[in-house]
Image (cartoon, rainbow, N blue to C red; front, side, top):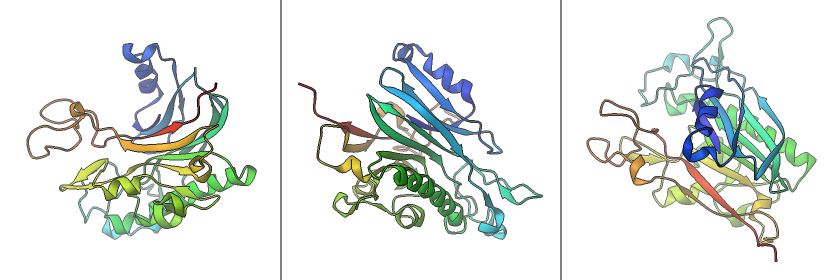
Length: 277
């Protein structure tokens, strides 16, 4: 599980101790983020199935010069996330990207968890910040593929952009059609889901798909003797959906009417392989 907007490591450890999860043997990978609000990213994994071999955080260095500071807050966005600027250095302190490598039932996999800069100040004006995040992400992926061109890589998280935005489509180069994915390329199943009207968050009655899981080409191959991609989806069970009022049908978030879960639905993918005879 790649997780975003986490207050601290203790939150994840407490979650793993909850009665419904305790017996499943979850463990935590977490780094403190430089984000000024103190929100982090991290991973949860089941020790019985996954053994980390390395993990590292990569800082995203972006400055206010990469966006239009005059435009800040001119376009209101329903988002509590803010790109907080250091007055002296002009650096925007945002989340690191975390790379975790390990063995999934004995097979090496690489996972990157992201929470890219927000859309504060407007989508277009803040786009260079997310394009910089995508460039860092691509650099991490490229470094893994230099070592092993057949690396199985998953990059995931709240990208604050959809599958058709420049950061994902052009900078990462993620394809929405499996047939178009070349060796060393990336496949984004969120593109097909969004074309069907499925999203992970809604704003002004329009759905978008920020919470993506993008995979490398070897996971698309049809030799099922090892783990391969099968299908993707969005987990939006009824208890997670606002049932009444102005935001009926949206993700159930905390509000005046009571506690909720998140303003985003989580996305997921399935991997499959042939059973051993």
